[in-house]
Image (cartoon, rainbow, N blue to C red; front, side, top):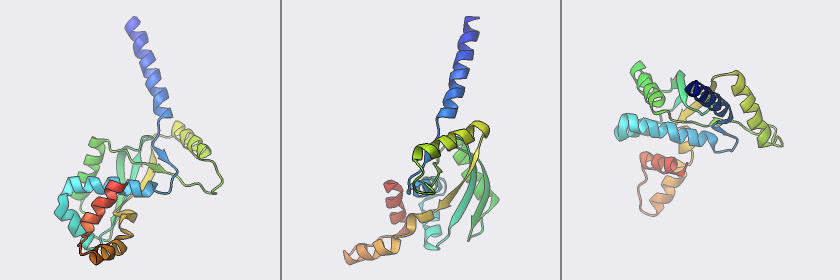
Length: 175
């Protein structure tokens, strides 16, 4: 009986914690942090040469994903790209994300800007009381490469070659 009561207490405690813990962000770099995470996953999954090929050919990929309140991927719903994406590619990424329990941020904006962050977070908590998942977008390379040309030219003036891959790594480390 004592073990049953302890088990019931622990289950209740974990249930309460699952609703109180969320990986929600309201800041302006949220999408960039998610792009850095998915880019890192893609490097770990496919390697430097494949990612360099994608970057050098300006290939962009958008993942639409279902995540739990902690931002862990439950399912990739849609993958869109300006390149042909195979089912094997989707399966590899989805499996890696699910098995590794990579936690993305659930991004919100302060719209209108005078809405307090606490109100947005309270609204997100309420959402997850009634729903098991939320849909988020993850972009590769997303906004991470927006200033590449500017930084490449600055590096060139100093006599340094800055590849797209090296710049992506810098951006991943930044975010």
